[in-house]
Length: 169
Image (cartoon, rainbow, N blue to C red):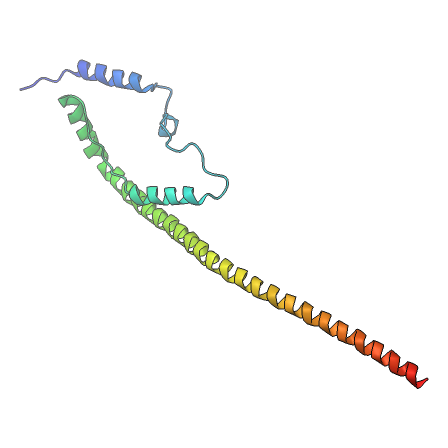
């Protein structure tokens, strides 16, 4: 039978706590430092950023409740016991978080799809608008030519009218 050396276990736990920079003044999980993957969000709309976030959420929307346990036999054993003791509390939270993540990933992907569809339809609309503008400009040019021709006819008729008036008098 193997004897358990609690002093050695406590030394290892204290060393791990010191290594992670934790101290006894940290009373809640919110106060424990952690590495943040994203330091800030874009202030302006960036299609590439939305696409990247949508892909990230689609890939990583499921959180695994347990990470592999490493260390010596005793540390692994103690951590496994702790896992079993808190499983009833952790698993419902993980299930809810994974459902939220899945729906968030789906919503972001749908927004990304909508924006891409709108951009494609806007490109089509723009080309239709450009051709319509070209058509209207051609009609406007033709109308100007017709108006100039009509003005010339009016001037000729007015001159002819004045000549006829001069002959009558």
